[in-house]
Length: 336
Image: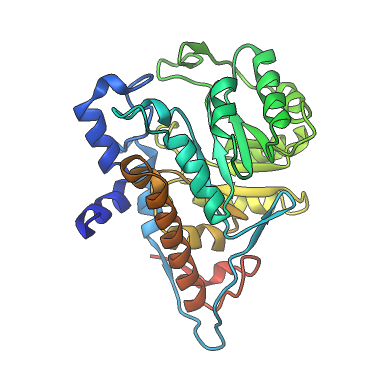
C-alpha cells in the first residue's frame, strides 16, 4: 500500500470499501453502507469524531520514560494490547471473490497477534464456521424483536466457547424513524428489564455496546452488564457526540462498579488509541482502521496493521512516560 493510500485510509477508513461500493454494488448483502462509509456531511457523527480527536494534543514527558508494556487484561485473560478488533459483520459476503473468507481471516489475525476479536451479526451457522479454530471471541447480537432469538444466539456463543457476549443496544432506530430491519429481520426496543434478562441469559460477561450517555451507562450497570462500549456505532446517531467526549463522565459515573469500559469511534491509528486510553478507556475497538487491509489483502496485511497500531501506541506511551496500560494519565492531553 502506498503512502498516499495510507493517508486516505487514515482520514476516512473507507477508500477501499468506497471503491467496492462503486464498482460492484450488487455484492452488498443488505442496504448500501453495510460496511460503513463516512459521508463527510455535518450530520455524520464521524466528522465530529475526527475533528474532536485531531484537536487533542499531547505534551512530552521523556525523562525516566521506559519502553512500555502493552499487556492488557479483559474478562480475566491477558492480551498483547488494549486494542480489540471490532464487531464487524457479513464480510464474507461483500467481496467479488467469494472464495475469500475475511471474517475467518480477521479471526486468525487476532489469534496470531493475541488481541481480542469481536464478531457482530451472523447466523448461528455462520458464526460457528467463523470461530472454528479461533482465539477468544466476544459475540455481539442485535436487539431482535423476537427476544428468544436473542437468548438463543447468546447461549449458542457460550456453548461454542465465547469469552463474552453482548448486544448492540444502539441498533434500535432505523432511518425511517421506526424500529430497524436488518437482513429482513425485525429489530425492536431494549427495555431495562429486557437488558437485565439478556445480561443474565448466560454465565458469561455481558457487554452493552452503544452507550453514549451517563444515563445508559448506569442502566447497563444496574442491569448486570460487566462491560460497556462507549460508541454511536459508526455514526448511527446523526450529530452524535464523540464517544471520547462522553468517556470521562461515564468513567467517573462507573468508578466503583468494576465494569470494563471499551470505546470506539474513528480510532484509525495508535495515536488515536493512546488518546482514548488516556481519557479513561480500559480497551478500544478498531474496525475501519483494519478494514481496508483486511478486505484488500487478508490476514497477513491485517496482522501488519495491528503491529503498526501497537507500535504507534507504544511510541506515544514512551514519549509521555506511560510504562503500562494501567498508568495512563489524562493530564498529558491538551485540547487545542
